[in-house]
Length: 236
Image (tube, rainbow, N blue to C red; front, side, top):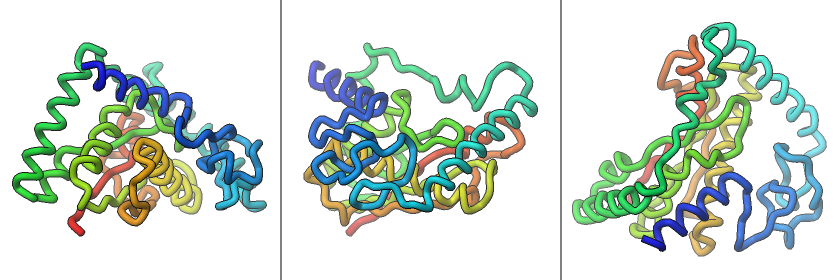
């Protein structure tokens, strides 16, 4: 039980504060300090491989921020119920007493999938990870989905994983394409921090912008469901 609690506590710390124990990252840009040539990059901007901001990204970051503000306004105008960006949905919390049960259940499901060697079985185990409007930051409430992915990669090392980022229809197509890819990349970074030995070649990231909604974008709840990252496993 202690192992399960510690793992989930670590996940929550990882998601909430980006406290990556193995590779400190002071400016939270996804590039470890020892490889970061620009250790004071502003939060939420895209950086190049050396940790420095692309000169063109300052304009993009400003546009993304403006897009997020407009989306919040739209959500309030559509729903008019005091709930913004699907707040009830995204803020679901899990009782700590359920942690061991959840982890045990996930391991049982993964073991059953390993016995059948069915990729579809693994894909049915995992759930989407959801995001706040205009943001690629992982939320602590999404730890269960990240835990499931981590356990599958840990117990089924022969699988390859594709991480697919999505957005709602707020903002322009170029902005949504960038944001969807950033969401997928953020999840990949978190998984690598959980398993530093994980082969990078086993994980592919894609961004589909707003092209593949799972719900109507006419309500805040629908847009919340569309702001997600999905996972697809396949055999090597």
